[in-house]
Structures are given as C-alpha cells and as structure tokens.
Amino acid sequence: MEVGEESSPTLAFEKDALDLTVEDVYDISYVIGRDLLKISSTGEEVSDLKFRIVRILEMFETLVNKYNLSLEELKMERDNLKSELDRLIKDGSAGQRIVGPNQLLVDLTDPNRPRFTMQELKEVLQERNRLKAQLMVAQEELQLYKSGILPQAEPAMVEVDLEIPATTEHSSATINDAKEERMTIGKL
Amino acid sequence: MAKKTYDLLFKLLLIGDSGVGKTCVLFRFSDDAFNTTFISTIGIDFKIKTVELQGKKIKLQIWDTAGQERFHTITTSYYRGAMGIMLVYDITNAKSFENISKWLRNIDEHANEDVERMLLGNKCDMEDKRVVPKAKGEQIAREHGIRFFETSAKANINIEKAFLTLAEDILRKTPVKEPNSENVDISSGGGVTGWKSKCCS
Image (cartoon, rainbow over all chains, first blue to last red; front, side, top):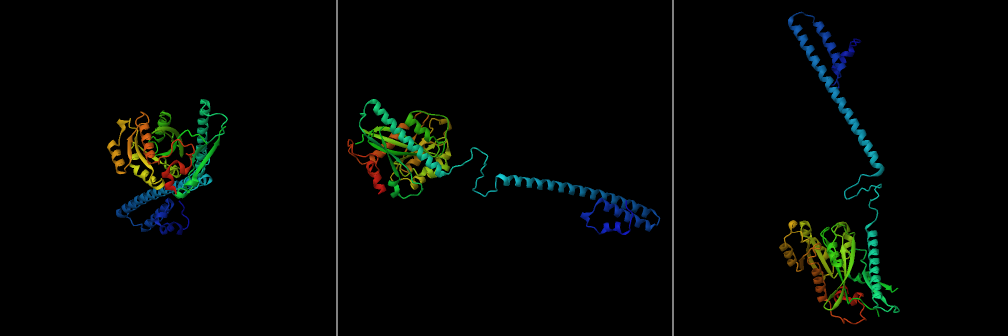
C-alpha cells in the first residue's frame, strides 16, 4: 500500500460511494488505522472498537469489490449487445430495409419471389384464355371436318365470344359492349 | 353464313372461398372426372360444355375463379359478363359458409342485376366431417331467394343437375328466338339474349 503524501489517502473520503474502488477502501483503512493510533490510549474498549472497525472495513472491501465486478460484467454484456445490434443493422441495410405496416419484404435472392404486377398477371391470363378459346374452336372445326359435316371448300367463319373485362374494376355498364372482344377465326 | 354448333351461349361463373371445390365441381361437369390433389386456381380459368335443353343446343362458357383474396381484383372483373353465378361453399368448412354473405355482396356490387344465382354446398360425400347442416344451407338460400343444392364433385352428386337447372333458369328468362335462323349472330352482344341488351343499354 502506498504511504506517500498524507493528502492522497484521505481523498477517498471525498468520493461518491458508488465510485469507490477496492484501493479507496484500503486508503480509508489506512487513514482510520493511523487515526486510531493517534488516540493511543490503552484499554479494552478501544481495542474492541479497533477490531470491530477492522471487521467493518473488511465487509466494506467485499461489498465494493463485488459491486465493481458486477458493474464490469454488465458493462461487458451491454457492449456485446451493442456490437451485435450494430452488426445486424449493417447486415440488414445491405439487403433489406425496415418497412412499415402493409409493406412486404422481398428477398432478392429468392428465385420464387414475386416479380409481376396484378395487371401483368391479368393480361397473361386473358391471353391464355383467348388462346384456349381459339384452340377449342379449332378442335371443334377439326371434328366437324373429320366427321364430314362441313365441306372442305366452304370458306366459313366461326366466331367465338370471349369477354375481356375492362381494366378498371368499377366500369360503368355502358362500357360493357366495348369490353366484349369478338374473335373471328378463319377456317383452315 | 356461318354454321353454328350451338343455338345459345350462356356465361356462368363459379365463386366461393378457396378450397371449397369450385374447380372440381366444374371438372366433374365438363370432363366427368375428379382429382384429389389440390391445385389452387390462378386468377381465372374457363371451360366449355355444350348441353341440350328444350331442343336447343346451349353452349355453356363456365368461368372458374380463384377463391383467394389476392386475386380479387381479377376475378371481380368477370362478374359483369356472367348470366348465372354459382356460389360454392364447403359443408366441412364453417368459415366458407359464413363467407356466403360476403360473396353475395360481391355479386350485388359487380354482377348484372338480373344475374341468376345458385348456392352449392359441396363435399356432401364427407358426412363424417360435416359442420354445416343441410338445413342451414337451405335456410340462407331461401332468405335470398336462390336455388340450393348439396353437391359432391368426388361422388358425382347433383353436379349435372345443378348446372342444368341454372341453365334452365337462364333459358326461361331468355326471349324466344327463331331457333333455326342461321342469320342470328349468336356471339354478338345484342343477339344472344334480350335481357342482356336490356341491361346494357
């Protein structure tokens, strides 16, 4: 223990209780021990008091030690969590973004991710259904030719009515006629 | 002039919750087949079946919609052209029955006013899993003044009957045309059905 200038060990008494280190406790012990020597009166009472004070100082040492260790552990824990959070935010900002309600995160590396708009799907479905209708007409025609109902030379036309709905959901009824698309398929 | 293979064209629409069996009902009717694997319909599909009613060849163009909410905007745009709508629920699925009112509202909102409606309680072969009593289906149909059948696409119960009844109901509303006239353009909007031009003009 340092027994340097007289003023330095007494500084421990000025400190905030929660800032005390074990070293400070030793300084306090030193100062109290020195002051006890000054009393220097003999007698059982003083001797007993000295032992009790030493005991209290030992308890004090344990408490301060324990407190500082716990504090240190919590600080380390906090720093770990902090760096973990920083890492996650950094990772996250690379690919994703924090989104609000009613928003969807899209994993750009997922080959099955949604990529097309509802309008595009609508158009593809309309195209599919149009072609399906044409195929049906062609099959029907073919069947008729095969069964010999239709003479081959007749340049007949067959119409298929396939409604194409308007793009807007709430269209007025008068648009209905315009919505209908009639396909004319010439016989092969 | 063109020689028609049919006298009339009726457009029907199948709606109802996802998984109630709309596609299976249609598949049973059009191809007399049944498939147990569930493949969710993407948006909208259709099948064609020609039937004969009262001496008339009637071509049924039946639109099969996806029940999933995410296709709502696509499917509702097909309500307008439908002359008959089949609303299907699943007798083993209470939620699909509860949603009937939601589907009826969709019809009110998007379909023609005089569209012929019909309610089907499908999967009636699965009696052991039934959660919707037949009487409840009959009751809600009565309340809305529409026809009701319990059907099974799997066991082929009431499927053809339902489609033919719906077609008959539409035929009853259709003004009588000269059946043999080859000059009638079946496919034109005004020619096919009087009631349609009435509602669209």
